[in-house]
Image 1 (spheres, helix red, strand yellow):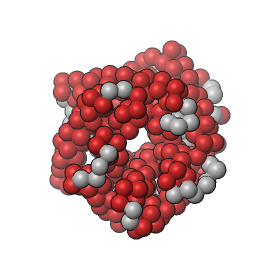
Image 2 (cartoon, helix red, strand yellow):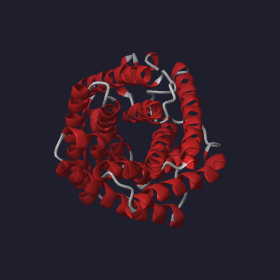
Image 3 (cartoon, helix red, strand yellow):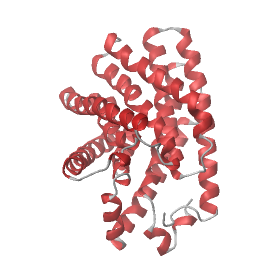
Length: 321
């Protein structure tokens, strides 16, 4: 993937959406680490993958900052785009996910990543909300990618309860949860009563899994208990996952786009939330469901990774749309 972005022209068209690769792969690393901890199944892949993704993230960040310095107008154009703007928080979300991954591996590094990710993410959230409120967006531009800034806020408590006051985590959790409900209503209305999403954005439907799945994990972290509300979050996330599985055949018929990475992190979240459900309920059903989800997640990530690498070799990434 590196070679496809080396020339100045490639750099000029380096897409912000590539940070979604960090989300998907870091989520997988966390899932593997949680499997080792909860099920005592040694995968020997969690930590090495986490280290590799850390390097990949900082490489992407370096390249995008280089793009910002050389082609600031291109970055400004992306930030003004009604859909691409929602991918800028993938930078702060990547920091938050890496902070979760490094818990128990390097707590000091996890803390630095968490504080950096939380501060950057609240800035992105405030900035994007201002744009949503004061710019004339058409309903046709609404798609599940709009959930990305919301998911980031719900992620904060997962590592945040160990790095700062729980009140800070509740602050972020409240933002994410309420905005998720609002955006869910808008998104379903747009999908059902208006024209279909563009083909390249169909994979973003899987983003619908992430808020309830991540919300369940964060809520358990905040309360340390399985109560009716946490069950609602988990089971709605599970229902959304199963519902999208029934649509998978239609969604996968579309050509490959970088947006296919939208499949990955939500599947990570479904896997980890199911593993956590097994931990708190001790019901063996959730153990085997988590294993099934992990197998599906790894398969999806391998397919998307292979298609991304092939597209990069063919020079189909970092090109004008």
